[in-house]
Amino acid sequence: MVIALDLKQGPPAAGRKSSFQQRKPSLIGLSRAALAARLGEIGIPEKQRRMRASQLWSWIYQRGTTAFDDMTNISKSLRAELNAAFTLERPQIVTEQVSEDGTRKWLFRFPAQAPGEAPADIETVYIPESDRGTLCVSSQVGCTLTCSFCHTGTQTLVRNLTAEEILAQILTARDRIGDWPNANRPDDGASIPEGERAITNIVMMGMGEPLYNFENVKDALLTASDGEGVSLSKRRITLSTSGVVPMIGRTGDEIGVMLAISLHAVRDDLRNELVPLNKKYPIKGLLEACRSYPGLSNAKRITFEYVMLKGVNDALSDAKELVRLLSGIPSKINLIPFNPWPGTRYECSDWEQIERFADIVNRAGYASPVRTPRGRDIMAACGQLKSASERMPAWKKRELAFGVAERAAGL
Ligand code: SAH
Ligand code: SF4
Image (cartoon, rainbow, N blue to C red; front, side, top):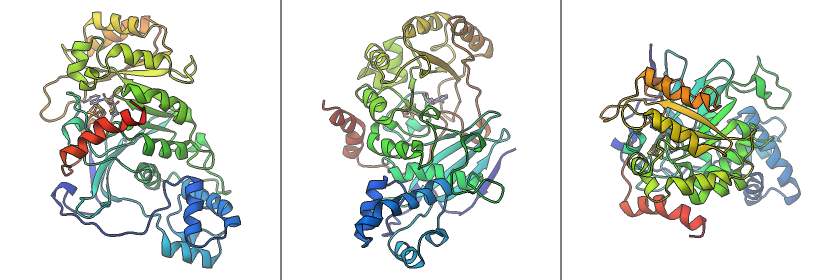
């Protein structure tokens, strides 16, 4: 059964004219220091700013408050000033779909950021399991990369998401699944203990290549993992990349979350076809960057994702080569049954073949490597996400795709 709630009807962003409206700046997505500086701009005395920034963080990220008026430890007059200057508004929820397996997918719409721009539509997915609840978060509208088996790759990138928009996906998902302190939850001013939360894990595996939007992803994940922020352990946050080699070291040093690599092939000729970024950053250099990933240990392994494509990359010789390539790297292997989408030329490997492949991987010491597909009935499974969105000029796409990472790495 699929339930689709059209909460606020409207044509998809691609079909809409620009709806730019100047809105009050949001306080979501700002570090405490940046938030304190913002408070300075509305005349809050310097000696109060740090304390006020901490209070606001607690209301925003630990309680999920969206109205300044509900912030009871802040004076009425200051609440009015905050209200006049800032917003904590959530994105519009265009649709919310619930899969028969409990997976939920939201289509969120963020406002245009500049005149002439369309609003940004992105998808976020929640996957409840018996021992955890994982939120799959998007980092970009669409993707500039064109992995041949990925639906998102067929969508032209509109733009990077801001830190506010990345965090807002987490906050809005928590609103919708009741994951804040309330009458049924401990409400002693602290956040819900990790073990009692609905969202226990975050994966940056939605739309987009997170390492092409490094600064915003970094800011958002540092707030998500901060004890005074969303307060999720860095071990429960995983960033998946298709292999932007120059940014891998910085991901470990500056963000420190778990890393997943979309490997999908063990030879460069095939990986060039499946993940075209491989032409720029081939397997050897990618694995070297993994070997020296900061903080890597047996307790903090890298996950290698491998999508199972019938007759393409699923030979048993590929499995043996996979195990050989990864030897010496503390790693986990995640075999992902291919999730089909309209118009794709690939098929998912037969189940028996996946089992034979998994056997070889298992015998090499990797436990339970096959990822169960979730939410296929609502197109919420890996690689099925795609929202309608408008094209951006080619020069901007190129800059986003190829400029940012290299510049940041000083190349
Ligand atoms: N851009 C990043 C993160 C998003 S994709 C990356 O590529 O790593 C999340 C995972 O889903 C990646 O491993 C991706 O290769 C995989 N994926 C993409 N399309 C898929 C599909 N149709 N079926 C199964 N997995 C897919
Ligand atoms: Fe982009 Fe990842 Fe899809 Fe490749 S697999 S097109 S990098 S979202």
